[in-house]
Length: 208
Image 1 (cartoon, rainbow, N blue to C red):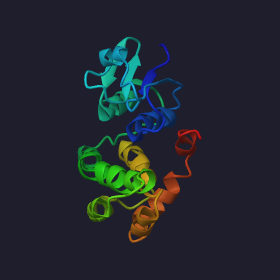
Image 2 (image 1 turned 30 degrees about the vertical axis):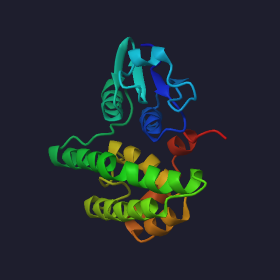
Image 3 (image 1 turned 135 degrees about the vertical axis):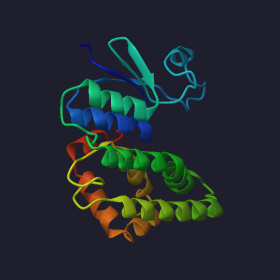
């Protein structure tokens, strides 16, 4: 089989999720840079890989995919390495629920409304940040209520839920408000400290 290809940028939370999955499976891959924020727009060729021009996209032996969760599940099923999805129906459903709530409620609030607004805007919108922090608190409370006993979100097994959450939380704690709020949830804080130390996480950190 040929080396899989990930299309995207190393600054992207969702590209990093896919890269984490590949790293945890021990799969070598090629990262083809795609900058969706380039001044001249997304390159035309890329729309053959993703009709909406978002990142990431993925290719393996001529098979193309887009949407992070679809890519992650494919990688887990198509390659050898540790299983990243529970076998039993209910834990797998909880994993999918966590991934869904992260996409629906956490990503925009934690990454864009709080971290990006605070770090990259010369005049941050404090009302937007405050609203993002309220949403982040609800998200962290939900994660805490769903977390099983053990080192990872689903218990003893590292799963796609952990790898989906890590880059989002990682961006959130770049700012003081994020670190302060995370500290209010000791179980999720302990989980974060643990996953941030994994080689897959440090190995997919944005260069520079």
